[in-house]
Image 1 (tube, rainbow, N blue to C red):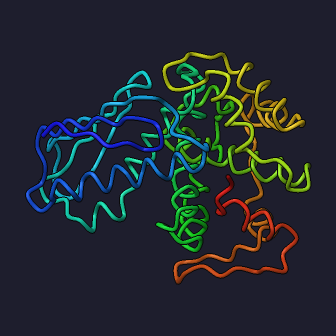
Image 2 (cartoon, one colour):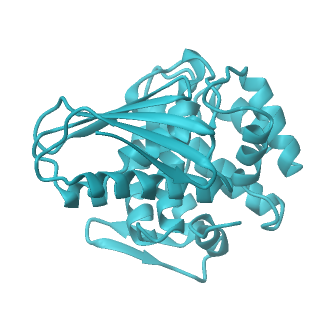
Length: 278
């Protein structure tokens, strides 16, 4: 089923090779459109003019997995038992679309490519109302310890485990967002840095050196946050005091759910992170 949808002024072509029988074509198109809207809301526009998405059943059960190629093609595989409820809770499509908006940094810096998509996916979905802030912060509290360095770690650039790549990169992005907002009294955020990188041609089809990313982002925020954090976390191991971070943001999460302390010193940053900015 070749089909297409428009998100903003961009064209998304869908090549439906095969699909789970529980899903209708309309449900698949709505799922893709919602993911595109989340990404477009964060960046102020969809990151590329055209992209092709290939969908097919090539996995097991309720599994959904994806991969993005050269900023112009996304391939998503389904298990045959995927349901509309699975699509509603899915993060894969949004995660992959965020790869369209950021340049390829090479294998040594893949932690930022993957960590950035891991960080932006839930907060963008919250901004359009398809994910609750409680869910976002609960998942961060539960997941971030996997991004901490273990014995023998040499820094994000030199330690390419799954946990350090996805959650370590995600932690870097959260800290960058918090620090930029704090240093600029909320006038700038990681979003400003990323929009500047995209506006300079840094989409998924481009290959950039890390220092260009850092310099472009820092210029956009008027800070040295990305440079400082890169030196702290990528070139050597850094263990982050997560308990202190969550306390400052006013996040209290455990197995029973998530509560917020709006009297916390950085509660205003926590709220701003999941609020859409035009």
